[in-house]
Image (cartoon, rainbow, N blue to C red; front, side, top):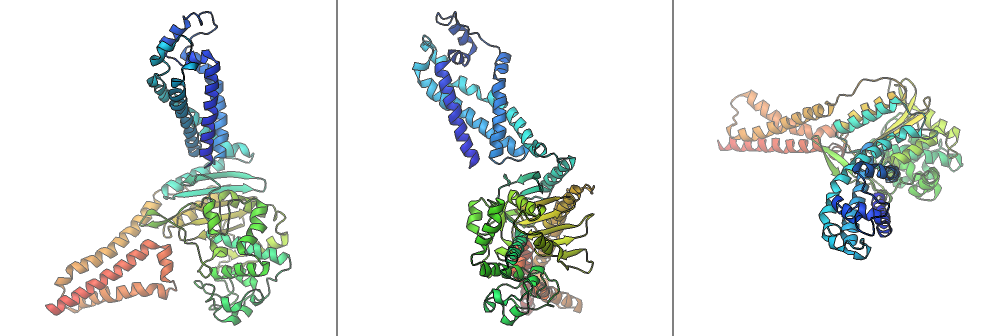
Length: 601
C-alpha cells in the first residue's frame, strides 16, 4: 500500500516537473529531439544566436549525474519507508518506482500530452512534428536505455538498503553477516515460505531481515506459545498492583464450574502452578474439561494452564484479555502491529500460514481458536511482527521499562521448575531457562498449525533475538529451524559452530516419503494379490492376519495409547494423518477381498 502511494506521488511530481520544464526551457525541448533534427533547429533564425549547443552522450550523462544521485538518495528513503530491509526488496521496490515513473513520463507526458499540445512546440518546427513531437517510436525507443540506467540505480539502492543495519549501529560486526548468510541459506534450503528475524539490545536494533514471502518487519505472524510470556507478564502486572496473589488457589478469580470438570480442583491449584505448568492438568485438556490427572506440583507442559490464566486476567482486570494486553504492553511499547484479536491481525496484514505435505508447502488459513479450544489466544495465538517483538524483548533488556518491576522479572525468569532430570532446563513463567549454552539463555518456542516462532534473551550478552516463520513442518523443518536458531544464538555469543547441511531437508523428506510410499504400496499390492490368496500354510495365514488385522488396528490405537488425539495429528502432521488413514482403509479392503475370494474359491 505504501509503495503504491509512493509510485503515484512520484509520477505526479515528476510529471508536473517535466510539463513545467517543457513549457519554459527551449533547450530542454531541443535536447529531447533526435540529433539530426536538433541540428536543423539550431540553424533556425530564432535559435542561431542562442547559447544552445548539441551535447554528446557523455556530456548528457555528466549533466544528468546530479539528478541520478538525487534519484538514488530519494529511492533509498522511499524504499525504506515502504518496508525494504534487504538487497532484494530494496532492488525490487526501487526498480518498480523507477519504471513506473519512466513509463508515465514517456507514455503519458510525452506521447500523450506533449505530442498533442502544439502550443508548447518550438515555433517554426510544426512541419517536423511527425519526426519529433508525435514521433512515438522515438519516445518509446528511449525506454530500454533509461530502464537499464534504472537497473543500475536500483542495484545501488539495494546495496545501500542491505547496509543500513550496519550503518545504523556501531555494534554491527562480521557476525551479523554470518547470521544473514545462515538465515538466507535456511530459508532457501529448508523451503521456508516466509521468515522475519530481528536482533536487539537495550539501545536499538542490531540486525533485522525478512526472507521469502515476508517483505516487511511489520508483517504480523501468529507467535504460538510465545504468547505465554505475554500472559505471564499480564499476571505479574496484576500481582504488582495487588489485584491477585500468585500463591493463592485460583477459585476466587474465576468460575470453577465453567473451567474444571471437578470444581474442587480450583482449590488445589495456585496461579503460580499454572504459570509453571505444575498444576497437574492434562496436556490435551481445554477450558471446560480441565481436571487434575497428574502429580500436582510436577512439571507437565499444558496449554490449558495459560488458557485459564487468560480467563483470570479478564476476571481480575474487568476487561477483555485483548484490551488489557493492548493497554498494558502493546501501546506503551509502541507495538502497533500486534494484537490478541483475529480481526486486528488480518487488518495489520497477517501473513498467510503454510502446512507441509510430503515436502511441499501449501497455503492454509490460521485456525483461530474459540474460547474452549485446546489452545486459546493467551496460550498461543497472539499475532505480532518482528519489529514489535524486538520492542517487547527490549522491555526485558531495559529492566522492565517501567512496565514491570525488577522483582517481577526476577520471579518470571528465576522461579523455575525442572523440565527434565538433567536440570539443564527449567520452566519459569512464560520463559524457559536453559544452561545448555555457554551462558544462561532464556527462550520460548511457538508452534501452531501453520506457524512457528522462537525468541531468546541473552542477559550476559545483552541481546535478544526473535524468529518468526509462516510454516509448520512438524517432522522436518521445525527440527531444522531449531538448529538454525541455535546456530544464530551461538554466533551472537561469539562462538563458531558447524555449518548446516543444505541437503537435510530433502534427505529427511525423501526418507519419510519413501516410508509413506512403502506403506501405501504394500497395502495396494495386497489388494492386487487378493484373488490369489490361499490359506495353504500357517505362515501365510499368520502374515495376513498381521497385515489386515493387527497392523491397521495398531495404526488406529497407537495415538490413543500415546495419549495423542487424532485431531492433533490431523492438524499438525497432516501428511502422516493422510497416509495412516489411507493405509488403514486399503489394508482393510485387502483383507475383506481376501476373505471374499477365499469363500468363492
